[in-house]
Image (cartoon, rainbow, N blue to C red):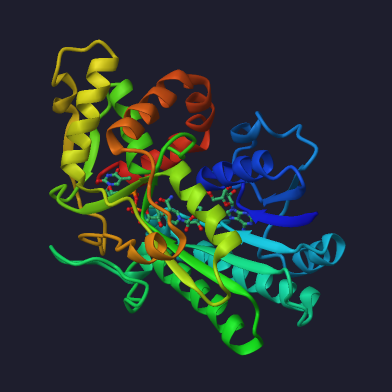
Length: 350
Ligand code: NAD
Ligand code: DAU
């Protein structure tokens, strides 16, 4: 019997990780801790929330007393830490929320784990889910390795980098069994429609402009979210303390090419003549500090843990579009209310 704390399990990647662990490991007790910000949604978990090994706890990881009490009460054996403020554009408008959750929240979790485990590291693991954005931006060639120095540019990536440094410091200073993974852009079901792919699916569906930042030439390396969840499972169970793994899709796309591909798929699925939605493409003011290119070198995780992405992009992208089109109610729920205000604030006058 193992008690695993998964933070941020009501968010995009978190719900896939929680689902995988609850279904695959019936002998583990899975505790999903989430404060349910705009990005957290319990509707994402309705298929598993009645399972006997699943437990939801509502709370803020940056609430020191609450976190310490929680660890004291449940005596977790492992932590998989995904909870974060995750959207770069929001971090540009409001950096402090990112410091609160991504930095302070992470350090409170580390302190609580260190206190409860009290040097008895046997069978314990603290796993920090991080991003490739901490490495900064690449030019036209090259890729991020685990040894690439951190060089974050946005308040989001700076906060994630800071948190990663704390995690490694707790390993090096106290001997805590920590691991870190840095992943590229995820896509798939249940992603909040502030991020490129679900936002553009929603806009194409509703014939709204598609706001392409700058010239649309920035490059991202896309990975299907369930492949990321599989890598997390493997790293949690197999990685040695102190290790870092980069996770990527071997799947680089310039934004504008990805958007044109999405338009092709959407027009076909919506029964519109080919190319109809191309007219929705609208070039807008670039994101401040916009990183030109990210690409992951996944050699280490492939050679050491035997992990490779399973889902081919053509298949995963179609599946993703199908999911959003089939789950109109989910879309309507998350885009009502505060979303309208968010959209105005981010895109009006851009
Ligand atoms: P998300 O924004 O969809 O979900 C974040 C979750 O954290 C939400 O459920 C939210 O309610 C919760 N949360 C936020 N603040 C909290 C707080 N103070 N206390 C408790 N819960 C809180 O994010 P995501 O895209 O699923 O990303 C999850 C993790 O993976 C993040 O750490 C992110 O940095 C990392 N990551 C994301 C990607 C990606 O492409 N989305 C890629 C690499 C790494
Ligand atoms: O690389 C991993 C990161 O990927 C994660 O750490 C982040 O949490 C996640 O949000 C994602 O960050 P990006 O900034 O790359 O994702 P986003 O979907 O916001 O943007 C993808 C690209 O599309 C980026 O170059 C900016 C561009 N873009 C985005 C939006 C929302 C647009 O051109 N227009 C838009 O409206």
